[in-house]
Amino acid sequence: MNRLFGTSKQEPPKQQPPPPQNPQQPKVIDLTEQQKRSEAKVKELTEQIQELDKQISEQYYKAKNSKGVQQTTAKSRAVMLLKRKKMLEQQLGQMLNNQMTLDQVAFTKENIQNTLEMAQAMQQVVAVQKEAFKEIDMDKLDDIMDDMEDMKFETDYMNEMMNRNYGCDIDESELDREMAEIESDMNYNAFQPQQQQQQASYQSLMGQKQVFNPQIN
Image (cartoon, rainbow, N blue to C red):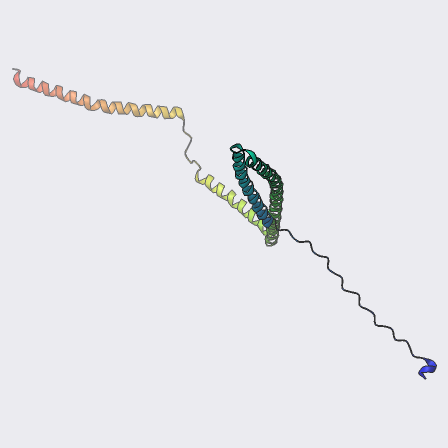
């Protein structure tokens, strides 16, 4: 039967597509580590140049104080050392430029990070303030302010009443007349005892005269 009618062809299994490959993430450069490496390289080149200066100085004095083959050999070594020194100085200059660039990049990165942190802090503060404002009933706050204004008005009015002057108006001319009268009374009272004393002295003197000079009737 299979030969007469044939059999259905079985479809080959579908191949699953390969999973997408994640693109390789760029490697994050550690600026701090890079700065340390640059500083170490600058220090190393500086020490090498200082050592070459010593060797060049030695070969120079040898060339000055020798003759013939020794002088030629010393000059050749001094020249080779000088060329190597120039090459190291050029490399040192490049490293110093790179180090300055790294410092600028690190400074910019630090400023950006500080700005981001400040923005996040401000965002959090604003969110907290918004939540705090939700807890405030503006109508109640308005009523409180009205009450405080009323209390201030009443307090000012009370202070005005306490400090009110209940004294009568004084006539300056009348006051001057009263003062003159008081002064006159004081002068009179001061004069009376003196007058009485003089009168008593006079009476005493007259009595003594009558004792020593009796009248004969």
